[in-house]
Each structure stands twice: as structure tokens, then as C-alpha cells.
Length: 97
Image 1: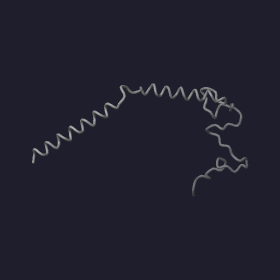
Image 2 (image 1 turned 45 degrees about the horizontal axis):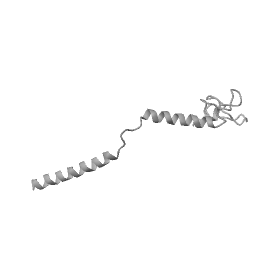
Image 3 (image 1 turned 90 degrees about the horizontal axis):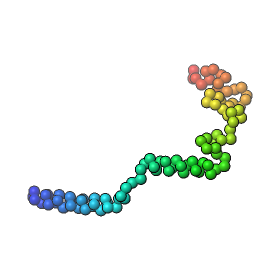
Image 4 (image 1 turned 90 degrees about the vertical axis):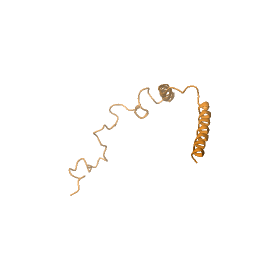
């Protein structure tokens, strides 16, 4: 019985080695460097941004036409409807009693 198990494990090992060799032969000789791939992707993104006429290089797409004072809200500002009924003017309005 022990001889049968040894022969079975040997056959399985030979089959596994053959399968691994076939898969290793399919691999390319070398792989692309991840830094080069990331660099090429960044260059392609910048080229696409430059191709669009409404984008300034180095500025995100939504911010190219905005200036400092043309109605842009900053992080602390909130645009309201102007009726004076905003939650910022009513202290404690966000709290439950």
C-alpha cells in the first residue's frame, strides 16, 4: 500500500513540474518597470490635459476659468439662499433637545 502512495505522489509531482514549466515558458523575458509605467501614464494624462483648450497646465480642469473673487466659496464659506434662514445664523439648530 505504501508503494502505491509513493508512486502516486511521484506521478503527481512530475505532472505539476511539467505544468509549471509550460507556464514559465509563456512568461515574457522581462516585465515593464512600474515606475516607467506610472511615468508614461502621467505623461499621457498631461498631454490629454494640454490638448484641451480650456485647461491650464498644472491647474485642475474645474479651476482654470475661476479667479479669486468671482463667487468662489472657500472651505469655511457656505452659499445660502439669501433669506437669512440658514443654519449658521441659528445657534443650536442642528442639535436635538
